Image 1: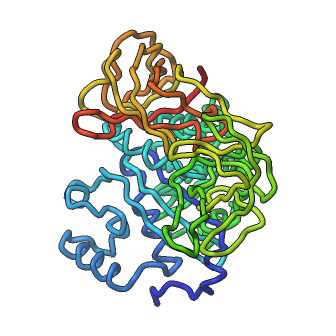
Image 2 (image 1 turned 135 degrees about the vertical axis):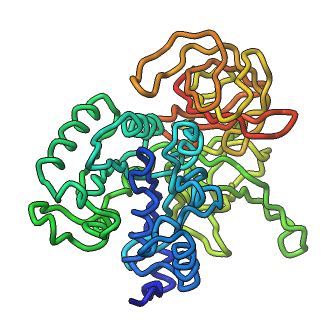
Length: 430
């Protein structure tokens, strides 16, 4: 079998949709094997990668090629047979580009799972057909819902170990639907499969002719993601000021950055925050080309008709559609550091392109991500715990609620002394 990447026209590749997906579920549900099978059967593994995996499989004494080793890249992962860090893999088919995040299943690596989920459009929730919906399945599904991943695909894996039994699959689907009624997810799909054997991963299974749906790759190629982006609220966090120092461009002034949400067009009336100065968009440029519009996640340069004071960390938005502006926030925070979160302690907060200091004023409650219940607490958040906190920043932020815009509704917390990322937050209000 050839393992060369399918030929894709370069211009067509650049115009393709990008789907970011993540795998999650309990330990040993087959997440890494599924990704390995997906890459192997779609012929998107390079020859040298396949040779390295085959060699590692032989050293381990595996009878067949262990496809889990395609993503379990850390030596500790290969020795333990588990996933610890988030492994990213990139591939493309003639229909779509993909970035896959293989996230850990162990409870002590919840922070790594949150990292993989933060940018995902779709989550693959793996369920071992022998065990059904377990605690870690519910935990990861809840975190996926909390982080506003719009599409879930429940992969009922290892169907070969239950004799390809349709009733087992139906019972698991029923159990998950009952649990998912409590989640804020609108699109949930179910696929029975065997990642080890390749059934319903890339090709339709001959062992489960009772299943009339699509195999996984077909679903991933066709799931509708265009409407997932917020195209209603124009937000452009300014990343840098473009001022070429040359005679030819002596009067050139542009503002570079990535569109966080909404659509910008030449002629739009805009306002710059925090100054409140107003102007119009003169042109939108990208790679020496002028564009008719810009939308997320495009990186562009905006030029305005007026020369107004704008600097890094400011935000350009529509005059009649502005974000919240404030210093007092309430947010759901996932703590990612061994040292517990300390109320009244100061941290560095990074939000879009803006950076300031902040103080955690209080912890309102901690979430039990097993039962989804709130535990009233005034104490600290420990490693991997998620809770709702109140905080105050030294400078105003320009934000939307996370449920409305993930880009302007999220932030990270950094320890001042070490500059370590210690927490991630999702703004829920003020």
